[in-house]
Image (tube, rainbow, N blue to C red; front, side):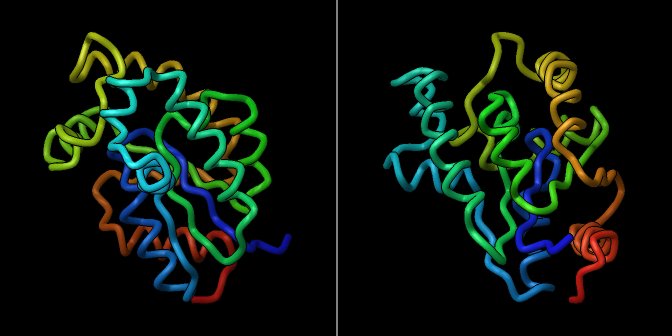
Length: 176
């Protein structure tokens, strides 16, 4: 199979954006963060879209962006954690060449989200629960969707982004 793009999926805090950039550097490809593209197109932070327009409006924008990005070539795309929630998005992502699910343990996700300065300003709360309980609930919902989309699963716990990128490039048989 000719791989002309790589889609990274997984829960927030799994390292998708950082790893996308590292893979792109190795392959001399472009990379893009789908959430950043949504913010660019809407002129609003994702948290503001959720607060002002609601989750459904955000998901509509996300579906447009997913469809557009999946048509690009020689690109590594970091999708938002909830991009897999809509069937149309899963179908588009599935056509993206290689789909890599970046997995992380509950404790690693909790730590990374808490340590990420973007969390408070850019990322909306997705439930009224917050913290570990929110992660557990959403992972239970999303894990089967990530698994169904993925052509490759990579555990990120205890690994540096460069190591993860190298592992993905090697597993996909791409030359860096």
